[in-house]
Length: 152
Image (cartoon, rainbow, N blue to C red; front, side, top):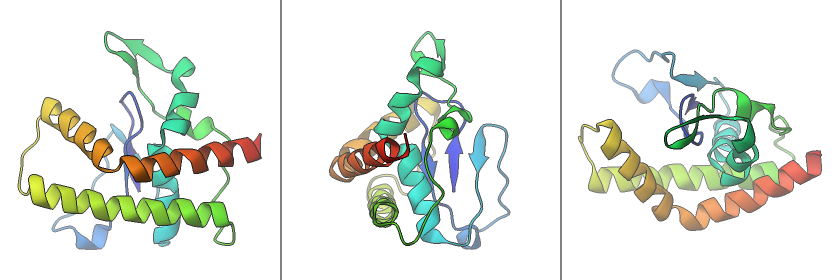
């Protein structure tokens, strides 16, 4: 699982390195977490992609011409628990994350197969993706809010 370091909001994805055609290198603009448990990876990606978690760090992010930026590790300061396969809330987040990943891949395959994105295009695609996943992201936000409230 990896997410962006420098952005208004975290943008996380679960990557199966075995399915890549080449070696995988995480450079300085991303953070990563390795796990052999796909559900744990989707749980983390759901948390990091949630508006609920991202909104909680806004007051602590650097500001640029276009608003907040540089998520870095600030989002990891939020009190979210380690993945627990017996916790119903964690399982729901993991399942929703997996649904989002599948829908996102289908969306890219249908609309942007073999596309080469520049920064501006990538931003538009992210916005389109959020609209495409709005129902699931709404459910994720509610679950993350509950998760954060339970841990305070």
